[in-house]
Image 1: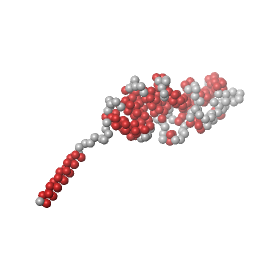
Image 2: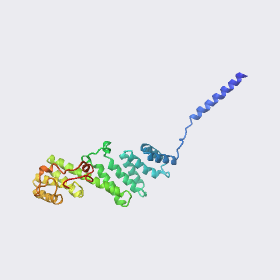
Image 3: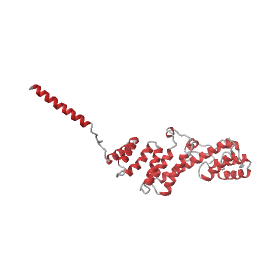
Image 4: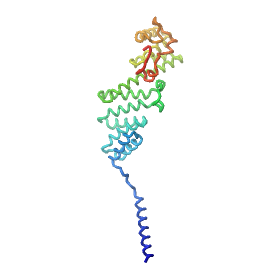
Length: 285
């Protein structure tokens, strides 16, 4: 009898093990797999600055529920999450997609603003976030894209809550672009490519009239025209320089132009250089 009882217990145990093994092979749904759960998790990740996780959850939400009630907001949040993850190309791509899919969305201005921010930050390296660097010596392509994005924002949504910040950034970017053009113009002067230098200087004067680099652009024109023997054009440029920037370092007290002193350029503080004229001291302007 004892033997039969042992056999019965063994049989029951074996059946239980087999049932457990079978049930473990069945696919299990995630504990939280609803649209609401994904979106709530993504918002929590954003709030805790866990942007990588936020991107993953938002992309999964959009993949599972492309027409759900959180789909549009998830696409908008995804732009921000990419931007905060320093993935600026992905942020621009997400913004482009949102703008294309939702041209009448009430928060379309935010999408344009984020796209501008992504372009604004695109050419910054890791060190740029912590150390002041001279961005005037880099390709200004992303700066031009950023100006275009902010320009569209201001044109279409002049009363947007992001308009004031966009205007400030555009001033900074225009100062950056004009300083870049002067840097290139001075390079051409050193290479004795005087026509190219004069054209760059004129471009600064004509396209960036309210930036701190205009005086340098005029000085480049004076020097380039003098080297080319175009004395009339040099004199015209000199008169404009002397009238608007009488304290420019290359100008003598009698209004003459000193080429040697022009190579020194305008003396600026470090703060003035890294903010492209927005802050700090600048002599001769």
